[in-house]
Length: 282
View 1 (cartoon, rainbow, N blue to C red):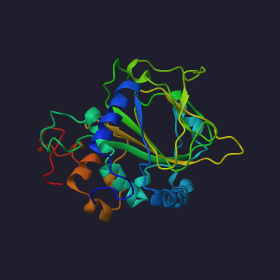
View 2 (tube, rainbow, N blue to C red):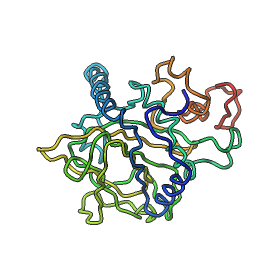
View 3 (cartoon, one colour):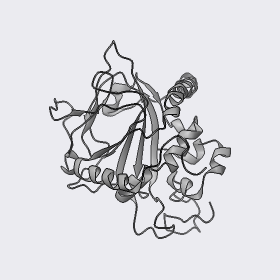
View 4 (cartoon, one colour):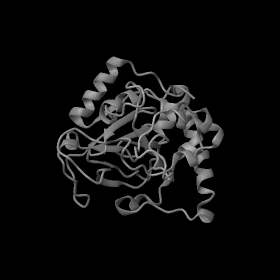
């Protein structure tokens, strides 16, 4: 696998503008990122992926979200959607949106791979058709002053999303505040984003954000949700063990790095004490 075949290329001038938007406002919107021919097919595919994922709920003992996320436990959710869909695995590890992420999460001292390659990791990659509102929150366990972060989120809309059907809300500029929002209180600063099918929002995990409820007259929209983190931050799943072996073998060395293969903790007492690796031996 190389570059994503379901998304458009983002030219350098657009990348620069998107990076600036994240630095100043905490988020950016990549318009029409998924190519038109793929938007409808991805929606159909998400329904199929959900059937495959939910078929094992009883036998596998599905563990619902906890904490503030527990309010969405009844929503349709697909954990680790990449294990069911080859093209979204490709998009997560090779799409040109990675060029927008690199200025925030790439480690300039990594040194073991070419400096132009992404060296951050994919921590998780889920899908959700949200009917329940998710209160204002952040997706890090520490908040720091200023725009620097070690975690970025992605929100890919596979339909038109807005304030009446479970759309994304953000508090522009809140990513620099170094504060956790009060999830139990109203937040009048929340701005509802109106997105078209195929639009991708990238935002700092320290940005205060929420989702709205889907009104009874509306249908919830499938959204693909992913998290990238610096290579030295703990990821949430062992992607290599979840991806079908044949798919894994076709990933490029950099795609495997993004999936976490170059920063796994070793169980070999004779191995190097360095927790980062290059492409050799993958």
